[in-house]
Picture 1 (tube, helix red, strand yellow):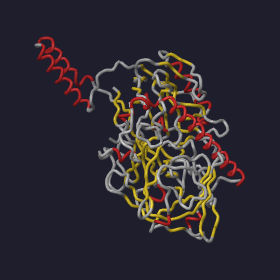
Picture 2 (tube, helix red, strand yellow):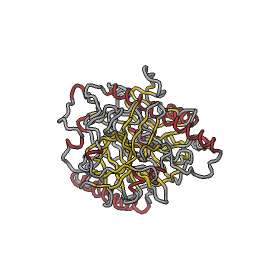
Picture 3 (cartoon, rainbow, N blue to C red):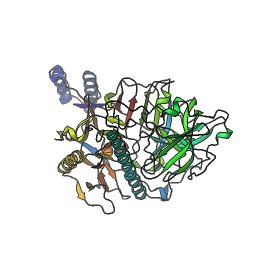
Picture 4 (tube, rainbow, N blue to C red):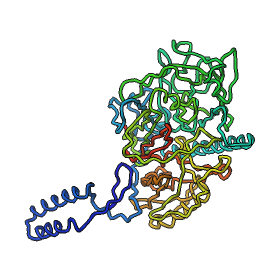
Length: 541
């Protein structure tokens, strides 16, 4: 019997000989009893079996082993039926209810997250249809993946030029995945004293946190006011001779002040002062959380494809990233839990995701090691062992998931990429087996897009093959059906396999945020250096 316990799919073997006498006793009474008595006997038998097996028995669904039931999502057009409840700037200000986050311990703090396409997102156009939002999201996804590929290629080429990958670089490179393609999840943080609320993009592919600042030589349009350091009593610029400035790989000095300079693969860039400031987390589960002397980039020249948010919340592994700086005052851990954005398109019922810093309950988690890539130290690499479709483990060579000697290839977890990318051999094996196994689904070609090559017309709830991702240390991530097929049209009948082929130039595989939905994922950056997974209801009501 299979039972899902907080995301760990365990098997229990029931010793039938130990309960056979009881079953015979109840079957005899059911034959001779009254209708009302029979019902009571059935309930007693149900309770008994639940106790002796130690797990809750479920009503038989009739699903074949290796399959999940795929439910047709409820579509609700934002343009025709949904209006915003009010026009407050931040969506969490519209909900007076307290958080209902589970398994989080004291000694840390949590931030509400929202996706840019949520009904209450300040970034969404209330006139855009589900289909248009999907098209925009896939465009952002392409740009994001292209940027990650180009970043990795440049870093590995630099590694080749250096002539050795046997030891880490003397300086941690400050890189970022932020551009038009990475703005998927956002939160708010308050800067300065008195504080100013700013909207920032969550990004596991970035290190240095930066925001736009007054004096603006060149600034893009953002939601809300631009932070003015001259009005803060706790703002302090960093000089060129500090250790923090030395951690920047691209810096310059101006009037003895440390200047950061970050460029992106699409030509966008941000330049400004490296500074210290007081940060306040008002968007938290309980009381506000204050961080003093936090290093960040105060951007005065920010040009390119940046949109809407004030800057980024860098969650990478670099010395100046948000979790690295917090490790001085909290446990060196952070976790996030992303709600399913596709299972129910009735936007009036949308719930927030969350991001948590500090220690949390990990008793139900399964952990797999994180891997160091000296050429690209910001990213979170994991060791993938294989993929299963249904009950079949696919024949994929280990080389499809491994890094080469210069740091190319491998598998990363990324919050800014939506659709999971797999190397050619891995994707081809997954796609072909899914097509062969999902014989009950009607294959269709969808015009106007070329990212997906495995799409179906589904008009009622259907059984679909399970997809399981296998990682080192026997960690198996069985994906919910909503993480396997995603809707691509407003009618709610066209769905595509939410995987695509990775770039053959970099061979970088990326586990995207669609496949991460419905799991709490913890990054343990202590000496254990690992990442954990558990299935969980991520909604913050």
